[in-house]
Image 1 (tube, one colour):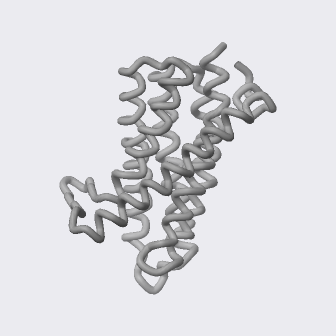
Image 2: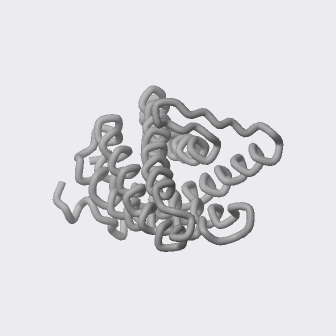
Image 3: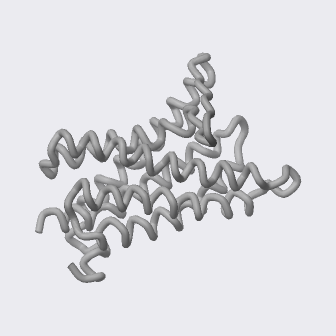
Length: 199
C-alpha cells in the first residue's frame, strides 16, 4: 500500500459518508449521555494515579467504539472479539486524548484559559488519541500502518482544534458540536482503512 492508497479516493466516499454519520451520531449521543448523567445524579468522578474517570472522559470513546466496532463487525466481517477489542481501543484512545487536554487546560491559569488555550490543548489531545487508536487498530484489524496512522492521525489532530467550541455556550453546550464534528471527521477518515482490509 502506497501513501496515495492511504488517502481518500472516490471509491471510499460511500464508506466515508457512512462512517461520518456514525461518528456524528455517536458524538451527539455521547454528549446526551454526559448531560443526562450530570442532570440525573448519575455522574461519577473517580481519580487515582493521575487517571480521571467521569462521564466526559469515558462516554465519547465508548460510544464511538461501539458504533464503529459494530460497523466493522456487520459490514466488514471483523470477528466479535476484534469488534469488542476495537471498542476498548477507542475508549483508551479517547481517554488518552481527554487526559492530554485536561492536564494542559488545568495547567493554564484562569485568566488565560480562552479559545487559544482550548485549541492549544485540543491539537495535541487529538494527536495522542488518534495515534493510540491508530496503533491499536493496526494490530486489531490487521491492516497496513499507513491506513491507520496516516489520514486518521492527521484528521484527528487537526480536528482536535475544534475543542475551542467547548469554550462557548452555557453549561458546556459548546461540547455538543465539538463531539459531533470531531467524531464525524475522524469517522470519515477511517474509510481507506476498510479498503486496505478488503485487499
